[in-house]
Image (cartoon, rainbow, N blue to C red):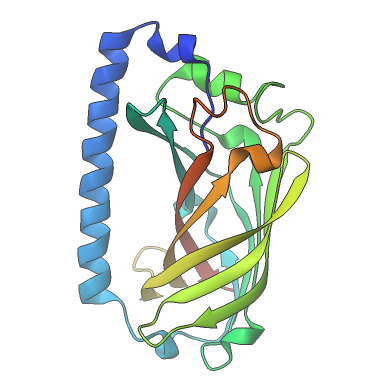
Length: 219
């Protein structure tokens, strides 16, 4: 979720414009690659091992984008997620996801902006150091799509948020030899619902989420 000081972004227009273009190309290439990988490599979801998984923090990212006054979509991400996934492909209704993310892990391509987002006018990471998501229901569709309902707590406010996920892959990681499962999830939130409303509505209120979630089976 990205909220920023317009003056901070516009102070070096040439640099920021080039950076936005690079980010857009990078994200487009990455999403294209992920789509191809999912189409050719993802196993049937019912073949994934049942069990309790821990988040692989090093390979889990919560990406976000927001309209920059209607000119561009500006992106950033959170990292450092921790939590668990209880997964049973035969009984998806019993699945459970609990995630905690350090708010001060937020990063953008502008260091000054990154620092501002941690401040009291935005996320206020000193007062609200963590964001959490706890699922309340999981359902799978005929095409393998996964719908996750749950509650997001951010900036001291809790609101329901629905994520739409798909299995990316599952198997033994060739590096650490751990059984790993990965998902991609998408969702939308309104930042003003969480009390983060500076520059709204001129600066987009709707925030799009793109989540890469990796989980390791706990022995």
